[in-house]
Length: 203
Image 1 (cartoon, rainbow, N blue to C red):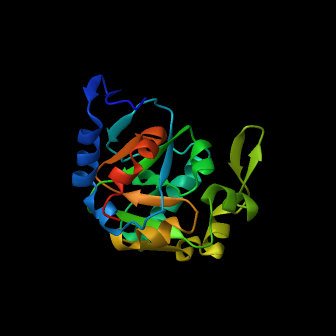
Image 2 (cartoon, rainbow, N blue to C red):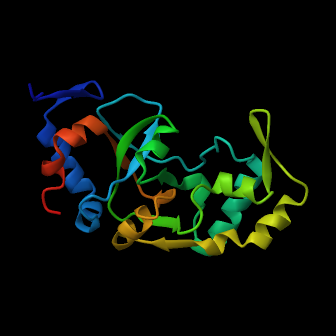
Image 3 (cartoon, helix red, strand yellow):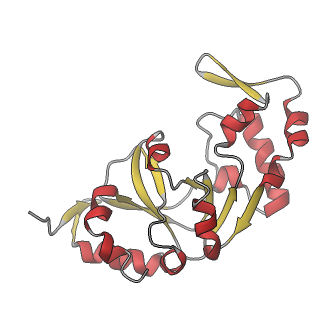
């Protein structure tokens, strides 16, 4: 039996309202996304769908604070914004999103930017592989000379920045993609599966 309504954010909302909202607020995404290319994000909350405004001072889950702040500095010099603190991370890989909580479909607001790498799948793991940080028990810590090692790796030059027209190239790397957006929506995977043709009707 097909459900006609869902409870979301303490209100009963018809699926058509959710879909129309996505098509209005995220039209840049739907204009450019190719059929079959998907974006996911893990979250600790449990909702049918939710509109979220990104934080400006995101605290890293794993990366040591001093490395996080230094990376923000070098990325800002290259791209003009604090990618690690202001960015919203998403991926085309559902299993990767699940590592960060409940996986949801991810839809960024109009006017978004993307920063992505063809080479680096996950920056924290890349830093580990290249001797910048290492795990000490459950905590990540820096190695001696970590700042020089970051500079030598030229990490920032492994990344590209683009807009909505670059969304497919970014997601099809299947690496982490960082979005700069005013807000975004996370939407239940089962909801999108059930209404997939309606959501992606013009693609």
